[in-house]
Length: 128
Image (cartoon, rainbow, N blue to C red; front, side, top):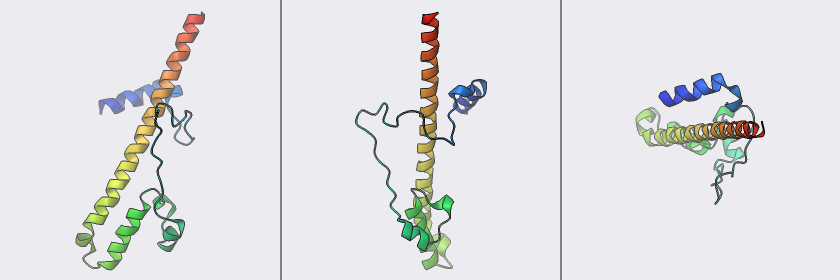
């Protein structure tokens, strides 16, 4: 909780180091990764998502797990809750990992903004 409080307080005191979640990242996504990054791929196709009538909020990198879970629910009624635990666990694990990646990206962007601001302040102090 302390780490959350410190980053929230910093963003409140100095909004220039708080990333805007509605806009794309300001820094190169490959900055700091000499060997590159693993590219994320959508496994579920648009046709599959349309066939299962997934809502917009469910069309993410975990859509294939969600489709498997819904398929299991359809095939195992009325005991779907007990019979589809594994599929539900896979889906929630994927959602959790996706959320952790987004939080890490936000934190990376915040730290790079903070570093950029600190370097600008040092250059301004050296020039003065």
